[in-house]
Length: 115
Image 1 (cartoon, rainbow, N blue to C red):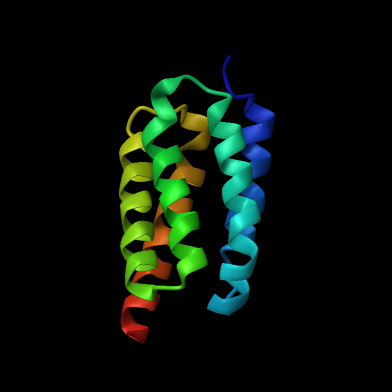
Image 2: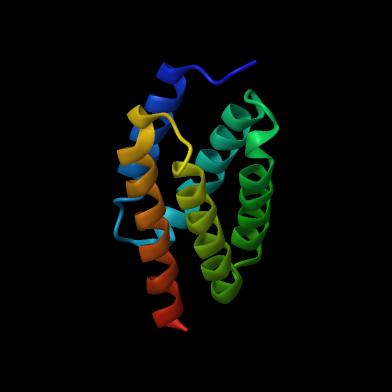
């Protein structure tokens, strides 16, 4: 089973919009639902996404624990793995993958500065 392009496009669109929230507390509160949506979407694909699923599960756990250092490191790892995935991705999604990876890296840096 593969991931439908329309489902992926919608997930990218809503996630990138949600990551535009400047209030990190509000962003963290909305994150578990977004993470669950991504996990569900990625599980519909081939085993190609197992690393991202694992990253997302870890991130969700760190968010519930509230440790900014762990969340920051997890976001950075997720961003790096998304950027690596972009190398072989469908060209339709390259811009969205890069935006998503960049925003996750930005948030990781913001959290690191708050420590």
